[in-house]
Image 1 (spheres, rainbow, N blue to C red):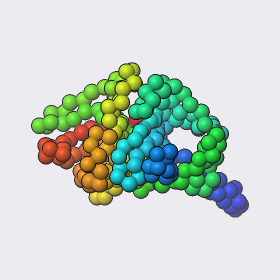
Image 2: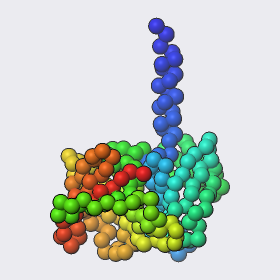
Image 3: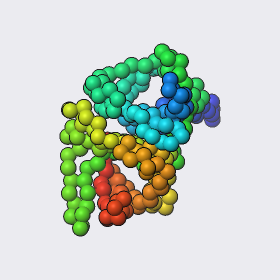
Image 4: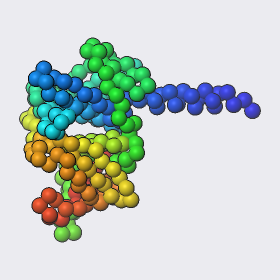
Length: 234
């Protein structure tokens, strides 16, 4: 039996996986004011976020994102939210990129990103929309097609939630950092939070369950109230 075609298929598959943009990317940058910035981008199942925060104290600076696709080496993104320039919401951008090993370079600017993860090991990789809650055993759902959205986007090791409105172009808030999924536990480590930077460094633990495409997020709020949220993957 000729094993060459199978060997070629495996090699090609490994090459394509290594060149995938899916996952989390990061870079550090000193801005014009001398601030040490941390830049993190998450690409997950056709949606993305790009966030900048102070690398020393976690103070939030800006975020934007939306949907994306790649054709050859051309990355096309449609903006759904932009905290710094809301007038960009609804616009489409195109960037020629080069992927090489664990590095992504934006051709027009020459800036390079280093891959943080490829969508693993966390089990919640994807873009999720808040779709409902369960209170006192009563399930209350809402449409995920409305313009007012709360999205949580996760790679294999990083998470970010964003609240925004695609019609009014309003940005309401965001937070994010790293996460782990261990034995039904979902654990967040906060690295930035636009509404309250004093929360940076906090670790939050919840229970999670995936059920028929829904992410059940269970635990207690920061005020100690019972919490049971339902998220649906986009």
